[in-house]
Length: 176
Image 1: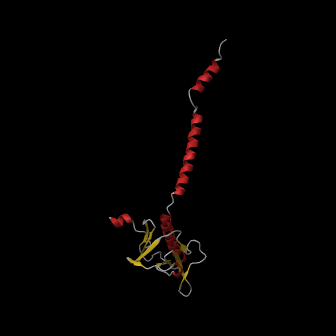
Image 2: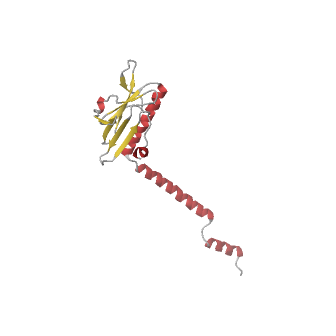
Image 3: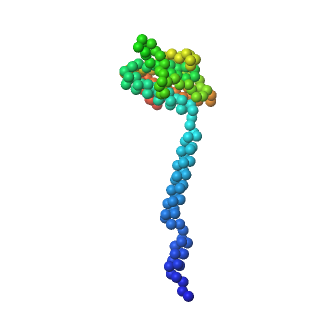
């Protein structure tokens, strides 16, 4: 009795290894698992100090844009536990921005030691409930230059710095 040549050939092909389709599926599954693990890792590595510094930087830039769009001066006041934005009312008096989720008062989400420098001098920060305008943003986008440092419990420090035109100076240019 003679063996079927097809069956023999089929057995030889199957014994040589995996097909191209099987290899592609395995590589695809590995890629998906790798991307999921990478996105989970990025979420768990968030640094609260840098988040606070980035949040203030973004809010100041947004307030600068709002001041230009509204053609209205805004101000920023810092305290021991947070900061708030101010707007001038009809009587030219400063009042807290209310009912604005982005420019409303903000309290830090951790234990930090903030320091505000105006014209190169450290300023004593009031309690958060007694905030008053310290940095003024003009309708042209210009602002009072300031430097704000936030120190964490581990003595790491984050810095937000703006010049009088409302730009963030390049740290590399200042050092060199």
